[in-house]
Image (cartoon, rainbow, N blue to C red; front, side, top):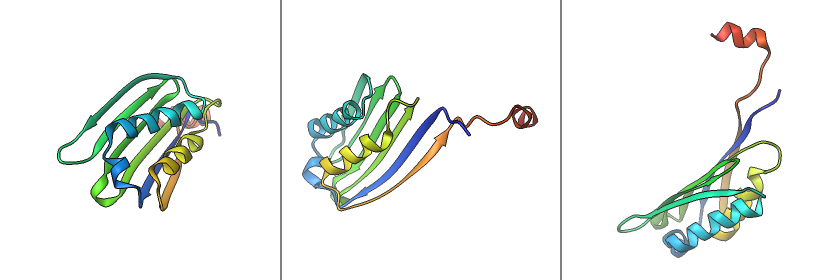
Length: 125
């Protein structure tokens, strides 16, 4: 089976609250994660919530990285989706986890756009 992309969803616990609440730090970490994984960054958008928390997305040529943080719980929801063979989403995820100072991580990968046989595709229509 071939897939168009790989999508890693990570539950990141025990993070440094001050990092998770710092929009500049979260943005820097997410962009570095994309670049370190070999992705090409296209656009970046982040928002700081009141009284706490950060959400953001790094749009890459290969798809995206997204995050939402709950500093009060030391928790971040991390989403890394890459297309093609050149960029490994796990490389980006490992960088994020390390920089957030996580103590516990649960992550899973889903293959996106799985290419199946023509007979199955026609049956689904």
